[in-house]
Length: 115
Image 1 (cartoon, rainbow, N blue to C red):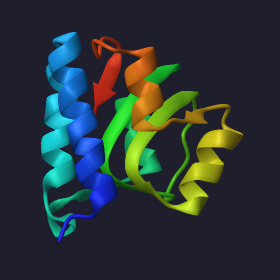
Image 2 (image 1 turned 90 degrees about the vertical axis):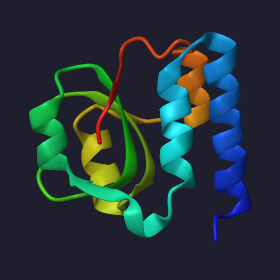
Image 3 (image 1 turned 60 degrees about the vertical axis):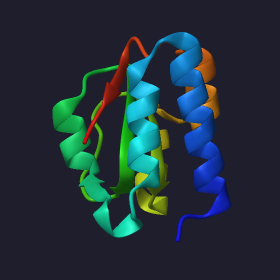
Image 4 (image 1 turned 90 degrees about the horizontal axis):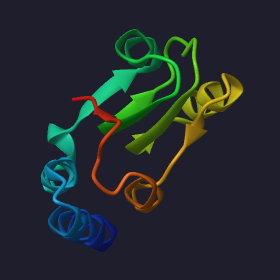
């Protein structure tokens, strides 16, 4: 069963997609409504390989703390381990919520969707 928080987040993402003509937010809403068993996990070393300095990254799953990020990123994900969060902050990066991300990047330009 999907929680009310996730349902509300999906509604907000769909609304932002329609309002800003940004298909990235609609895609994230789709991912949010999938069962948690269907969501993916990703390790920090993989994020580090796929991104560059100052990227804004969205991952629709759980971020795990194996490895390190060698550059600054802004990360938004459905879930993140405590060790991964600490490593991102230690490398000079930031963690962001979906509402903050939509506010800063309404059209989704410059946002890297992993997954």
